[in-house]
Picture 1 (cartoon, rainbow, N blue to C red):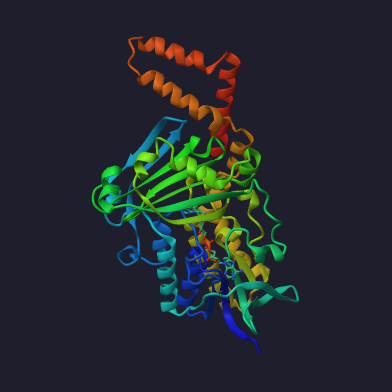
Picture 2 (tube, rainbow, N blue to C red; picture 1 turned 120 degrees about the horizontal axis):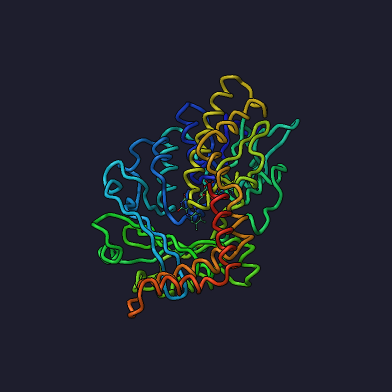
Length: 431
Ligand code: FAD
C-alpha cells in the first residue's frame, strides 16, 4: 500500500514551506517534497523579503532568521547610456525594529524556513521529483515521484512547484506560457567587503539599500535590473520578458555584462568578486495569466499560480500569503471532511480578497501595456535624462531658454500630444 498523508506539498520555496509550516502547526500530517538537494538550492531571488507576510507566519522571525540587511533605502534609477535620473526614499524608521523589508540569500533563508516547518512537524523529503499527480474519479489523490515505489497518497495535494508548473499544466490548469507571460532573469552574487559596501552605498553599519534599474539597464527592453546589498555580497541582476529577448535577439548574459559595465553601475561593483551565477524565469503575465488554482483534492500556490507583482517586484510575499491561505483552507476542509472543488474553493476566494488578488487585479494590464508601447523605456527615459542634463548644466543660458530648448527637443505638437496620451494611458493601467 502506498504511504498516505493528510497533505502533500510539492516544492519547498516560500509558498510550499509557508503552507507546510501552517499545516504542521495545525496538527496536519504533511509531507513537503523538494527536488533540490536542500530547500533553496534551486531557488533564485533578487533578494527582498517582505517582513509583514513572513511575520504573519513566524512572528519575530527577524530575531533568528538568516537575513542579510534591513533595507533603509530604496533607489530607482532611470538610466540612459551614460546618465541616470535617480529617485530615492530613505527612512530611519526602517532601520529600527520591527524594520520594513530585508535582503536575503535564498539558499540560506529557505533552508532555515524549511527547518522551522520540520520543527513544527512537517516531514521534508529532498532530492525527490514529483513526476505527476495521481487522479482518480476526477480527484487528485496523491503524487507519483521518481523514487522507487514512489507513489504517495494524500487527502489533498498543494502544487508549490514554481513558475512553469508542469504539474498544474498536466492537470490542464494552464497551457504552455507564452514568451510575453514570463521574464527570464539572470543574477550574480558578488563578494565585497562589508565596510566597502556601507561606504559605497552611504549606509551605516548593518543597514541595506536596494537599487532598481530601468531603461538602459535592459537596453530599453521591457524589464528591470537590480542591485541589492547583502552582508558581504552584492546581488546584481537583470530580467526582461522572454518575448523581448527574442525580438531583440539579445542573450540574457549579454544584458548582464552590459549592466555590470554600465558607467552608472560599474563604480558600485568595482573590485567585487563573482561568487555565484544564477538564472530563473519569473511569471509576469499578471492577473490574466492566473491559472485555475483549485480542483478536487488540489490547490495551486505561489509562482505556480503566477502570483507575481512585477511592477513592485513582489513575489515571495505573495507566495507565502497564498501558501498560508491554502493551509487555512485545508484545515477547514479537514474539519468538514470535504476536499471537493467546492469546499477548497474557499482558498480562491480568500486569495482574491487578499492583497494578492487585489494587487494582481490593479496591475492586470500593465505588463502588456508597457510591452505593447515600448516608447516608455526606449524613448521617454532617455528624454527625461536629456531634460535633466539640460536643466542642471550651468552654461550661461537662462533657465527660460533651457525650458524652451527642452520643450523644442520633445518634438512637434503631434509628438507632445502623443506623450501626453501615453502618460494618461500609463496612469490608467496603473491606477
Ligand atoms: P519557488 O521559490 O520557485 O519554489 C518552487 C520549488 O519547487 C523549488 O524549490 C523547486 O525546486 C521545487 N520544485 C519544482 N518542481 C518540482 C517537482 N516536480 N518536484 C519537487 N519539487 C519541485 N520576489 C520578491 O519577493 N522579492 C524579490 O526581490 C524578488 N526578486 C527576484 C529576482 C529574480 C532574479 C527572480 C527570478 C525572482 C525574484 N522574485 C522576487 C520572485 C520570487 O523569487 C518568487 O516569486 C518566489 O520564489 C516564488 O516562490 P514559490 O515558492 O512559489 O516558488
